[in-house]
Image (cartoon, rainbow, N blue to C red; front, side, top):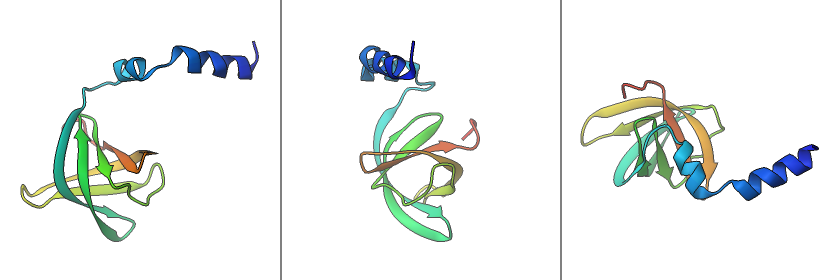
Length: 101
């Protein structure tokens, strides 16, 4: 079976529900202001959702996939390092460097 056929089958049998089931950790909607340090600059964002493995930031941060970021929540003093793992719909997905985060 060719690559084109395999991609077509993946699209047919893939769905948002199945994608959600593959996630390692459940996601929870949140809305909290944070600062993101990336490539020597600080960007203000809002947490869109959070899981034990990472977060989604809105609006998206101008960063390459794999780039190191530090997410800071001033009110709590929390500062967590992570890496950009995805860019989508105006948001940026960040995976925490430690699962203990």
